[in-house]
Length: 270
Length: 270
DNA sequence: TATAAAGGTGAATCCGCAC
DNA sequence: AGTGCGGATTCACCTTTAT
Image (cartoon, rainbow over all chains, first blue to last red; front, top):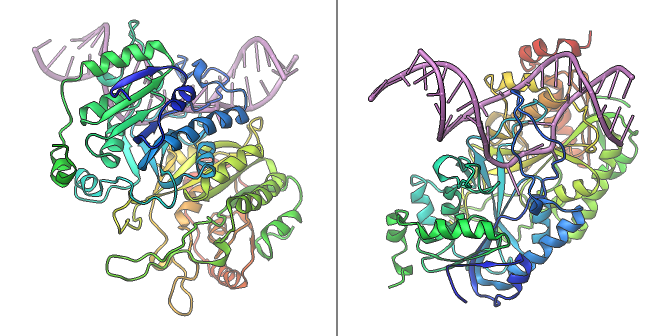
């Protein structure tokens, strides 16, 4: 298995080619199946540039369920027994994803809430501001208890208090947000690096292999590199792969990990 | 239909006796199916008094799914077209509940995160502190858009900023927590009144009928009374009913609702 | 140059009535 | 069910333009 590469192809097909029990961590940011129908306008009459990508369209709940069952089943097969998986979603899809994972035998360790510090408001005043996304962190099964969790590191990272399942993190905007040649956002759902930093720092050791089956513009790969983990990405769109490769190649600064290293000396690769 | 009463009996059987399109709001706090097998101990070897009630035990996912499908189906039948439903749960059950609701045709309006200000830590350091529960707020279907949502009131309640889907509220402890004759907590999962206050204030008008099919020790009834709404409770355990009746009868103070009244004059009952 | 004002934007299931 | 139109509706943060 060649590491630190991006495989171009269909997620399920490419997952099938990977070996049993070979991956330490999976981070998956699948399509949410948002079911948006009409355009949304702000109070000043500008149009919201929402998600209307083809990759987010499914014909029915049943189609979406079949898709998720297929890739989640492969993920469980290729995960090591000490490995865990993270799946991120919104209320549009996370309940279906959670049920499918439970039915496949996954064991939920935490439902982590990404509490957005700067969510888009509900302009019409018809609901509460939707301020969260949910991450499911799961082991392969209830019986497997030797999964990696760097409790001390996360406690230190959190100001010497045990980190909770609520993570207050801003949206990916500004410098960090990748732009296309037209100056517009290159990917409609790029995740903030801080989110991936917490994921990778908490649930991998140095040298572990992190797989992202919906690689997009490569936030998982970028953070893995900055934290000196190996990564493997699967992505269908050549345009995203191009951006991701360039992004990762240009990384020259690494995250400070002094605390983590201090607490995990025995895990370090010589 | 006699209002402001508690019906003793099986939740599903009693729901079946209620009329179509007759309820304005449902708040449901069903069994979570926690699947706790071994006792949990604190670092000092004291045992954690968790949920170990018979009513929280189900033989399998399928049994739990059947149970939830049955009561959620009845709830959808008895809700008015302008009504909505809230269901609270944890990661143990909320994904199954959410999927069942979607499959029954409910339409998710928000997934509200109850962010506990004082959650129980993870003593073993094996996971992140589980600091949330999730509330699903749903209408009967996608097409029904005339549900009650007191946007302005909630905005005022929240310091003149739109209220988000994250509610920071403490656990129900201290004076508010009902105790049995032995001084121990009377109910293992009593919810804080602040939670119900936000639910009822945001999604009912004065005089509306609020149904709680898992009434327990009556937090829903108590808050409904304090906010001058009518309530209807269903509860199987006579012991809980006794406590709830006494609790609600003793209420003499009402929540201040000046802001709400100011913003909703047209809705007031003469 | 510095500060202020104006404009843009983010995984969004976002109106209600008359015809 | 679809269309048209009057009217009510937003928060944090970053970028660009104006003073």
